[in-house]
Image (cartoon, rainbow, N blue to C red; front, side, top):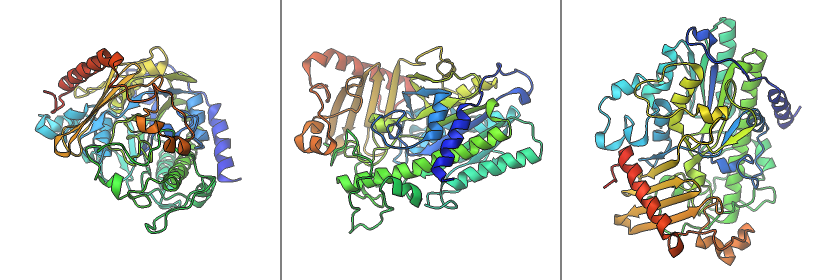
Length: 493
């Protein structure tokens, strides 16, 4: 059986898995649900057909997981004070704390980092009687939390073979589950399955590269050829961003092997093909792990969450990296299934990755640590609430200061770009219901529409300068300043 047919077969089996259960017992760790938290590296929700009907990425296992669980449409990572956006993002996942209150945040705001490290995700669940296991990339994370996992198998695996790529991470989990079974370990488990892909360099395996018409390109002098099998250009594709992004010389925008500063259609489509090849392989590996849980009769009592540390541009808005706050980069995919989670539903959610700690505690009956600043998303996952917040805030200040800020209220979104040393002072206002791709005036140019095949209407653009939206713009600016002050943003004045 081919790899893709095997994956489809697994997804059918998993779709039929029963995932209902009683509320967790306050006593006895053995009665609590297992947790499988899967975190991809650099993955936009718009890569998935679940979020973007234009996408051609095949993910039968995740589609099946979504069918028996909940898809959250508006999950975000909050932001970053570093060009390595994964670093604060993964700190937020581990600590349940907001961006400017992390133990490594600038301005020295945290008074008791030792108390925080003692209340991280692995520490909390290990104290609650869970077997805790982690596999992920090395570096750009929260080492204080990582070393508290009972079982740890970390290596950076971004190659195009089973040993050098995503199958390696899946194997570490399979080995852990088999050893646990042999030892008759009856403790519930918390598994953090972190893949090193689809982060660049996006070296895909031949089978998947062929399907997406992509090549593992490394020759700067010989750009990839156009291939009809390559994914189409994103609807918000541009050959360059219309202004300085406050950190335009960051590595992701100028030095990624296979892309560098190229934004021509052939390069972008090839790179998206590589991204999809790596992502489909991840989907296949998740299928292997879920099938093992089913065989061990653990799947029905396991909370499974799939997400990513942040999104990624790859040609959208003329950008390649993660140092921006457009939806494709600020948002993350978020799919959850298992005990106490509704089946076949979608919710807006308005959740941050930092809400994971309080959510997992709530779903398992484990006490939430006092250092936590997140909000449990259990009502959203149970299907009893649409959102847990009315307003969402985002920040990026990894380059020139103060950098980028954004705020979302309902269907409206504000983005501000400020870098006095670079002459940057831009304001964008989008109505996301009518302009979900955050199209700009440049997307209306005939040269661009000829490439994307899109014909945006007059309201699918930046609305900040339109007089009829002046009151809305002022409200959004006022709300952003309020959120900045409440969250301890050092740029708040």
